[in-house]
Image (tube, rainbow, N blue to C red):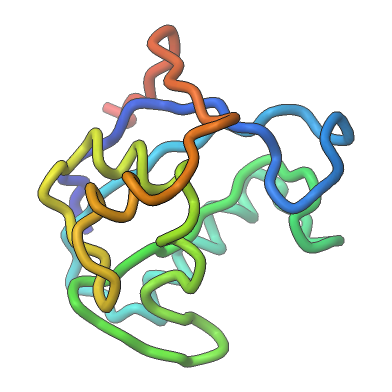
Amino acid sequence: MRVKGVSPVYETEPWGVEPGTQPSYFNAVVVIKTTLPPSSLLERAHAVEEAFHRVRDERWGARTLDVDIVAYADVVSDDPQLTLPHPRAHERAFVLAPWHDLDPEALLPGRGPVSDLLGAVTREGVAPRGDLELRLPE
């Protein structure tokens, strides 16, 4: 697995909960190249979450880290363990905005250009954080 790019960081209001009940989230997109199949990549994502003490008590609850696989090449799958592409990515500016910043030509399989999808959603509550940067370990 090799990291090909990391997006800018965005601060976003929590999604799916009452306003003011959770702190803001920080979102970014990482594009990787891998020989792992999607199921193994998901296992790795869950291992990273576990290393940061992720607890899955409630849907959309506060968490230390949430690693999602948004898309995997052009794979389209309705597997309940890993639906690809992510079933709600096309309607979430907190996914689309950083992804577009990283790769303006990106395509979401089955949905089209990320730039078009981003233009169709509101960016309210989604703000770039120029003072924050994700850095890869050296």
